[in-house]
Image (cartoon, rainbow, N blue to C red; front, side, top):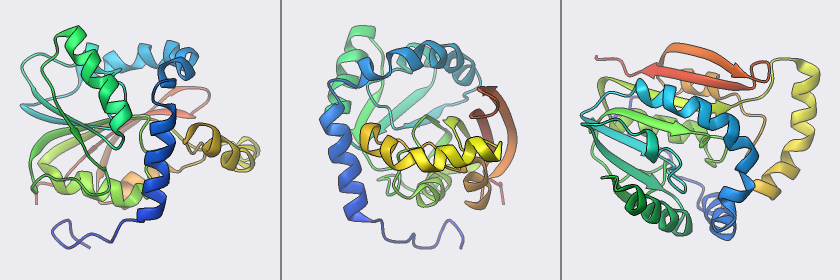
Length: 218
């Protein structure tokens, strides 16, 4: 299926459940992520140093943790599925005096024309997108030819024993935090039509990865 063809219908029930879950925890989200953010904050500047505009989309802006690292001279649009998270992002943008167009939006069904953005960025988002393959195809659709996808993600461990443990724990983790801990995100990116350019292990023996992919210019 090409990016120009009609995308499959999203799972409305799963999407509503994800939205409701993050709406409930939006006021606690930064506190819940406090310890993880000690490591994430080491990786975010590097990711954003590689972002190229002029037009950039951040998918899953959350409470705006990336805003401090937005590069100068780019036009950033940032979307989130949840009104509660977006409210905190708007507050952070005001506090930091960051120019960003914040919008409600679903990675699986974005309200942008084809070939809109030079780069698309997500950090620890596709663990929560109900249909990650659909979301990644949608990001491909809105990215310009030869544009890039830049991601930080946690994925299922390559070690099979650890991976099996993550499979067993995953239902509990989804109920607690909304995040799947056993997704094969690198393969999902490849199968969604992106051309992988760089996959780098960031920590915990390959569970955390930096992923960079490009949209074919043809």
